[in-house]
Image (tube, rainbow, N blue to C red; front, side, top):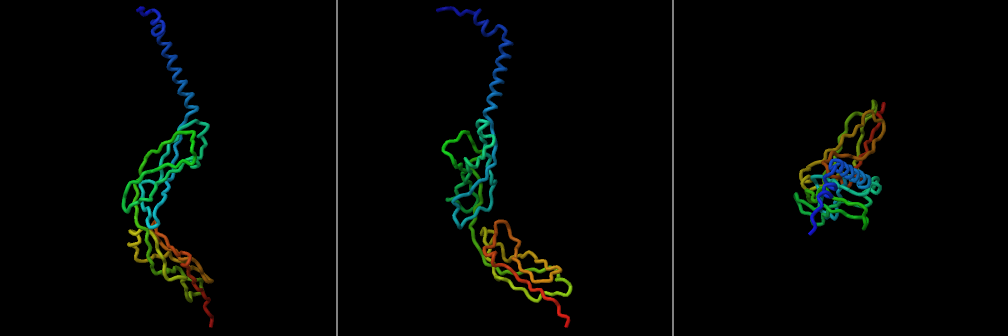
Length: 224
């Protein structure tokens, strides 16, 4: 067995060790710098799409409707990337249940082969699901202001006396009447025709909104 040549080991590892250490540090820093030119990290805030939700259900609340997507890859390939062309974030609600539950977040790839690496900041989302229902309620209007001097309201005609209100069951059950937005007729000198609008909670809509209009008849006072 040959003995180790300590002089050679000394020259390789110990002699002028401080210079060699500096050279090693410089080499590592150069490698990090060169790598940073080619490999970068971008953060995208992706809207979460809810798919396959049964027609009789509605999402009424969520902890957050966006997901943070971290994309890593070569700088030239991802610096101006339109991430939505390659990836979509979705939640499959085909098996949604009434109440508050967690659902897995999935990523759909629009391309089979991607030139970058990606990961989500979370893999689940908390959603509140309710039944989607409707109710028929009477329609009224509120008129504010007065016509111009010498004019008066002779009549008004509502296109449909009833509105079909649609939304989450919890909210629909609480609505007992519709609150119309006041119609301002101040200084009017001719008939007014417009849609009747209502103050509605979020997620509540009027199904037959196109039928809910009013004609306010403004006539001139006769000088007889």
